[in-house]
Length: 396
Image (cartoon, rainbow, N blue to C red; front, side, top):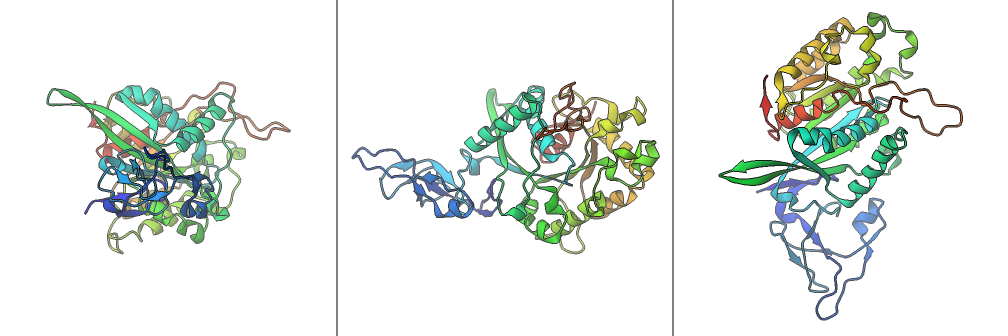
């Protein structure tokens, strides 16, 4: 029996359980359903007035509203009543988890990554990347304008401990392909959820994200390399570059907690390795550039090929792996090697330059005067897509 995972609440259920929402249009005889508060959405903090939910067989693409007798094509999740993307159960859907320590730059990275996917990377792969729902289009558009047009960094992600749920951004990634002398489209729905750093500092916070992490098809773990104990001394950097934080923010602790959650996923067990591909992405590598040789893979631009370049990625992985052992970060590599079947290291910079200190009276920090110049932000995401057979893999 086909199963579906909601891209908003991450609940998994049989396709036939997908329900519908009335379109709210007037029927030929004048009957029309009036908008009202949906009790399910209201419990999740959404008090908007909506047409009523309609029962039906989710395997079909339509259902008939029992109140107004109109036919509707609007499918909703039976658990959270969020509207599902068009034909959601009939196309590929992938959940990409985005996690990392507080102040590792997750919100900035997510915004820049999606901007790059919709523009430069989209052109590279001849792909269209669009928001799959109105809220994604509205809210992501606002964050994109704030960062790119106003040059202001996003606000810190709200922790789940507040009880205010932040819904993920959901996008449709469409690739053109040719089959038997005709052009077709292959769609993949991508769900991005940004977990607050505080949610990874306690078992309670991690527990709130169990469904999210265990439903992920791929995970990007964003880590600040300056929090690895030996980095600053090994590279001869000024001690002031060290982030201010507690031991709970260390990469090894974050990875340990995430690993414990994933070990609870059905099918893993105490003696099996975790099969979910995990991209370990070290952010803000622009802070290290001056201390790295000019031929370092971390300083080279991403390939511009219409496929994932495995050779380039493997070289970067091996380079970062060697640096970890030099930086007293060997524990990170040991943990990953012993618990994960597929993991890979990446180095990136979402902004391309360290933002200036916030001036007195400024509510939010601004980007550097040089503007946003992302460096290899797409690499972890493209690696995940290649492992999930969404894009092709090649070697130069």
